[in-house]
Amino acid sequence: MKVIVTGVTGHVGEGVLLECLQNPAVEKVLAVGRRGSGHTHPKLTELLVPDFTKLDAVEEQLEGYDACFYCAGVSSVGMSEADYTRATYETPLRFAEVLARLNPQLVLCHVTGRNTDGTEQGKVMWARVKGRAENALARLPLKSTHNYRPGLMTPMPGQTHVRLIYRLLAPLLKPFMNTLSMHEVGLAMIHCVERPGLKQVLEIDDIREAARPV
Image 1: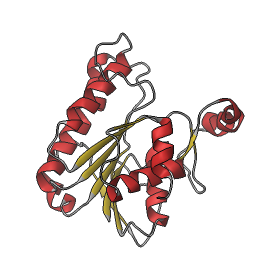
Image 2 (image 1 turned 90 degrees about the horizontal axis):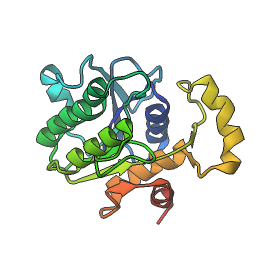
Image 3 (image 1 turned 90 degrees about the vertical axis):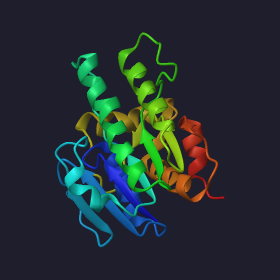
Image 4 (image 1 turned 120 degrees about the vertical axis):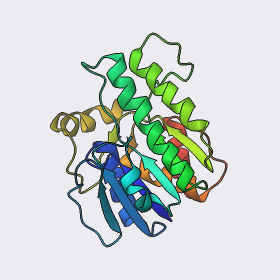
């Protein structure tokens, strides 16, 4: 399969990228981001895009893909709802709309987060906005859309884009929390492409189940 991965300078995106590069089911990876990933590999091509909502000049390079693993995102800390909506709802939706037009048989795996509010009516701003994004993406004319709601994720070997506090806390919290590895998250995304019919919304246990071999 040929896949697009976004957010490769973040914890989730880099982990998914590394899983794709080592997985024999993946033939080609296009990393789309504002900055380079810092990784090199024969499978890997990088496309630097300053604004994901303005893709006219690079559309040709986005054609011919089987999947997009959308892992880009920002923290809501210190952001207004309007700014967070632009980053978390409008940006992935505009990006995915272009992919749907260019690759109508594409499978989209979109990372939101644990406790995302699919009703769009809750009091927690970030959860409500993420839920709105999930619902809008699920309505796009794609082969399938899968919204991932992971919690704590332990990094892949070789990851460099992991915050120090996360490196310190993850091993301590793992025995007390329902955690996933980045290997499981990346593998579950690959299996969503290979196995039609997996859930549209995947909570932690669903992601772990999707990562298992048949």
